[in-house]
Image (cartoon, rainbow, N blue to C red):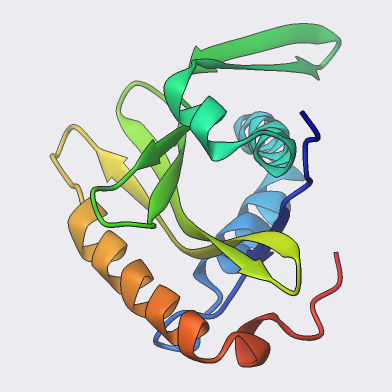
Length: 162
């Protein structure tokens, strides 16, 4: 099977805000001072790399293994990296920051000019205590952006170089 590489892109949301890019930039800045932030950033880079080369079907149906070397020590996480969100074609890329805080990146696959794209729109943190879960709201907002991209893919996807 020929594995096609997927381009991961972040687009501005309905408020013309790059939520995902903004979050990752903030985490990157924090990682310069914080070992925790650096660890999260390294795992997220590993997750994004895996997403760019694996099929969604494979990531949904099997537990992924992410292994990084952090301060000379190997660290591994095993879990379902991608989950479909009951509204086609919206998915979440999942990452646990700790037992309580769970980071979610919402995206949709999109074919454009023969290239597979995973278009990221939203990210948020879900917590168990207090119970905060914006999944349905964010999923629906991501779906609205999917419809906009579908209507005018050139506007959102042209001129994007990886």
